[in-house]
Image 1 (cartoon, rainbow, N blue to C red):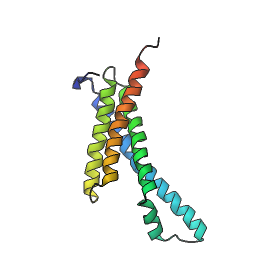
Image 2 (image 1 turned 180 degrees about the vertical axis):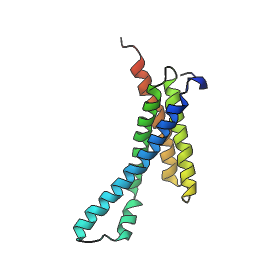
Image 3 (image 1 turned 135 degrees about the vertical axis):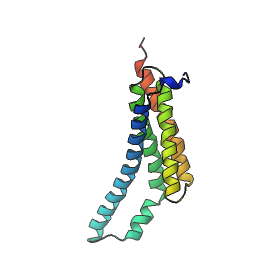
Length: 143
């Protein structure tokens, strides 16, 4: 892996970061809405917001959030790396680092970063790099 910044396709990296952040925000929202709908049907009425908030802050939902961040960064890193002629891993890593910057800014604006936020940042870097690695392996000739 070479570290030439001229190999980075910045437009595609920005698109990969936006795609990663959108997926990482939308999927947990859909999970929480789905839980609220199911709870509403079970209670035959409007579900209590305390139970929905308790579910949203639970450990399994936080773990799923970290996994969603890793998968979305993998997708974003792969999108950016497939468009690069060289330095695919570097493009994927740039998507991961860009996602971390956006995620930290969003976390600071919404009240702070916790342990799960830091784990999501690590997952974003690993997922972006892995997406770049998978795109690089696709361009290699097979023997």
